[in-house]
Length: 78
Image (cartoon, rainbow, N blue to C red):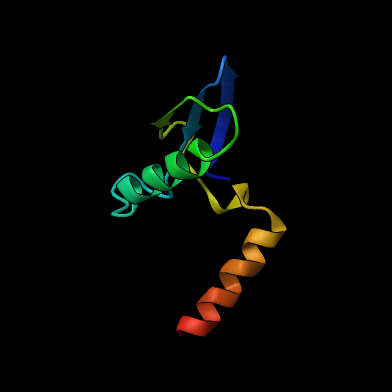
């Protein structure tokens, strides 16, 4: 639910994504993780990640698997 779009042309990849809220302290780390993961794919030359907040992220954007994983994580922390 955080990735809004992926475009690829001639090995250049542009990813549009969001964060759960604008002040998320993990934002820079998430961007770097995306770049690292995508850069490791064959034939990818360059990766650009654009963070947007429109539309705003909501829990409704999560898959059922994501909701279940979040619940398992919440149970292990609390």
